[in-house]
Image (cartoon, rainbow, N blue to C red; front, side, top):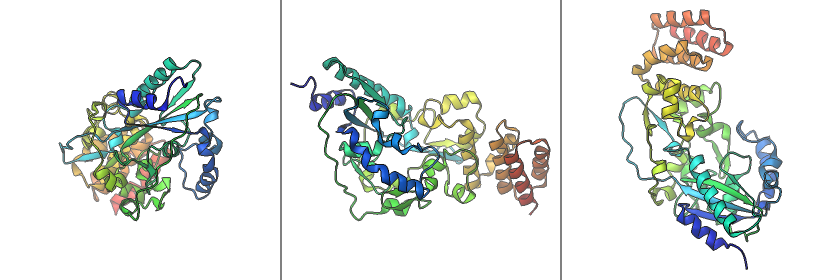
Amino acid sequence: MDCVTKEEIKKFAQQIGVDLVGFASPDCLKEYDNFLKERENLGYSCSIEERDIQKRISPEFILPEVKSIIAIALSYNVEYEIKYYSRSFGIVSRSSWGIDYHKVLKEKMEKLSEFIKSKCEGVKTVCLVDNNPLLEREIAYHAGIGWFGKNGLIINDEYGSYIFLGEILINKYFEPDAPQKTKCGDCDLCIKACPTNAIVEPYIINAHKCLSYITVKKGKIEEKMSKKMGRRIYGCDTCQHVCPFNKRAKKVVRSEFVPDKLLPRHDLIEILNMSKKEFAEIFGPTSSSWRGKSIIIRNAIIACVNTKEKSCIEPIKNLLKSQSPLLRGYSAWALSHLCDKDKEVVVEIKEALIEEKDEFAKEMMAKAINRLKG
């Protein structure tokens, strides 16, 4: 008799607040070798993806004795009324509401691992949450958590695509669950809604065009893409927002994912003026803090330009003296868009340019001066 059954694991997972559990074979990723190579050749992979394809499809690199993968999913589709406290606001995606989901999932998976170990001797597990090279959506698909939407996300009939995914690698064999068949049919709302046409064709995503990636990439953002960002300062939910399965998805009561200090519509001026301490207090507890303060403020600057928010001019001027060359450059760029032919602003940027040592910031300042001069 088995020391613990799949049904017992699923029952315990439910008791500790896990919404979905499935089981997959560690070999389920081998079939994606050619897919990943083709994606790389087409230039659709981005800088935050692991380049070594074998690491992406080989769970045994992490746990050599792995015999099964337990996939879990946690809904973040919480009941919450979005309020607008300010006219000058930036938008953060739902995935960054509340406490960092990595911590929440890891805690639940560790409890589940301990439960299994209490039943079975010699069990080894490794808990993974979006911090490893493995193809976690593909694992979730093969474990029966949901099917692939045309936007590349996993969709579950009950919870939609607003689900966080995690995996437990385990050196004990469990019969894999069956993958679900797609229920998207002829629907192409996500493809049509994508602001940047990142969904090249059904199920094929060009990460370089995806605003979820663009808002976290380092350095300069192409202006044609920064215009598409609108008010977004972290992530993008557009393709999920239009999905019919999310319209009717079950709402959950989960206090961890209810917004706290970081609001879904957050005041841009507050973000522009943030100190390191304030960034740690507002963004630190959330999943949106991993790229650091400068990236968030850069995005807030872009949002000010996209919305022609004149009230942000003074805070942006202050950023000409930022310690970050990225922000010094972007502040000059923003002022050239918000302060049409303003001679005083030209003088301020010229003074900053004289002191500037960074090549990126110099280039942005010089272009800003030329733009302001008309």
